[in-house]
Length: 94
Image (cartoon, rainbow, N blue to C red; front, side):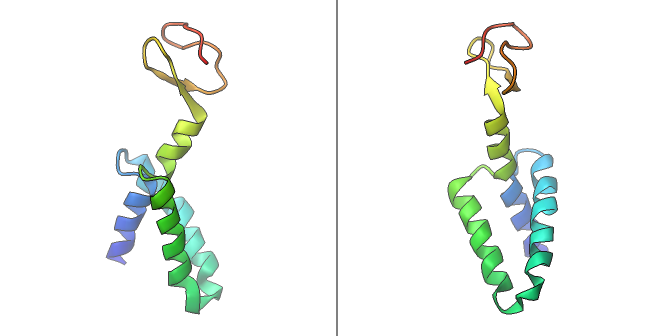
């Protein structure tokens, strides 16, 4: 069980506290969903974690954040992707 906590931290991203907390809300239900397939439960969990670590090395929540935010070219502040202008310097976003 103690190794699972380390996996949650790495899976979500260890940069902020929100990464591991978000990973718990994703991985714990996944483990419970795979409970009916007891023989392959650990294997399926390992495959999911390995795929996330291979394709999203900074963590899942960091990858999601990069997808929903844009960086301002002038002041380098991150803005929600639906904004047309920066919330700080009002520069147009791409």
